[in-house]
Image 1 (spheres, rainbow, N blue to C red):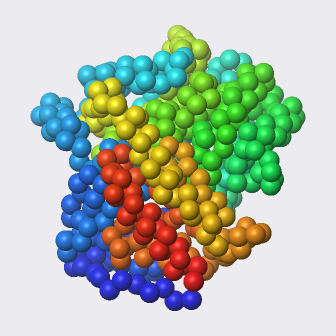
Image 2 (cartoon, rainbow, N blue to C red):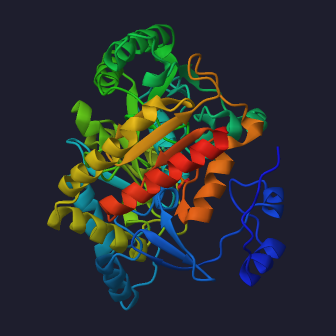
Image 3 (cartoon, rainbow, N blue to C red):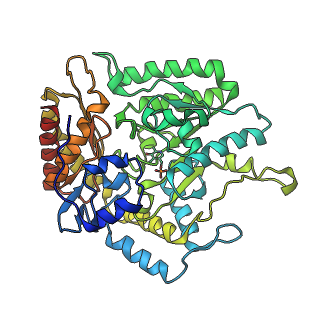
Length: 454
Ligand SMILES: *Cc1c(COP(=O)(O)O)cnc(C)c1O
């Protein structure tokens, strides 16, 4: 089936296609799919070089939290540039790294009181995996080398992070290079039996995890999960009872819990951190994406004093944690993140979001009757629509039909950036979005689905 492309291109796009290789892209697609040349970003909107405006309904890969170029973050960055650009974080420190760590310790679940910096989400996952493994080694349990991940999980695309990722598209080609995690079946509520509640299903899936731990716990360092929403795996959502039970199982079997809140942190699921909805504290918390409000790359791994102290020893013991990136704790990025947390402290962000997410849920509700929609789900400022070939059997459209791409192309023509994950159309807008803009975003998505399924 051919894909009609909007007839716009630009000189910048032409130059780009001669030299740039883009992420998550079959470059050949750009023979028919336009390359947007973005010249300006402001609030929820992007403007291209020809002056066309697009609503950024996916927050530029979930990074842009309050909207593009938030005035407070812009001002903080300008001020920081007049002070320190970059210094290494070994043997030195600076106010933004310290102040941000203090604020992160305050804002995150109890017990997480030590902060290790890296510069992107995948690196944060690498840090958490290595730290957990190394903790057990320092504790005289070097056989705890394996990790348990959930089916459908996504934790990034560097070799370690990809190893604990279970999304075919990203993983299968590279699998010979990866280590094998133990996979526990996902508590994803979309997979529950008819008539079963999300909570009952979550509890059933905890039973499967218990069996896995029964057999393997002695060789397991940690369980890694995306709390409440498995984002890149298709915005699949699950009941918080799973996280509560997971925390108990990790305690019972003496394995670490790594919470990857790289996508869901900073209010996306309605609470500042998703773990709060289960009232749990993980042993490691990975943060990135929205951490800097969407301005600069930065990530942080928070852990407990207990973990930290297992590395703290005379030099000759060789217990130190070794993981360094040149730009670890970059002052400019830390300053942006510090200001991001200050905005959460000073403004009723989560409260405002509650009204917006209620409005979004309301607008999406009628879609459940659509002949090609099998599920509509929301969690705070994340909402997703499962587009299917057959509503009764929930049979998916084959991926090579690229129905999601047609929704994307329709969005471009109507000035809304939707970037479906396969057949899942989702929204993860910046928090500055207005009810009218939500209406536009939903209207365009519905039109796109109608066309893609026609
Ligand atoms: C995006 C993402 C990552 C990887 O972060 P990058 O900065 O893209 O490397 C890891 N985990 C989750 C849950 C993510 O959504």
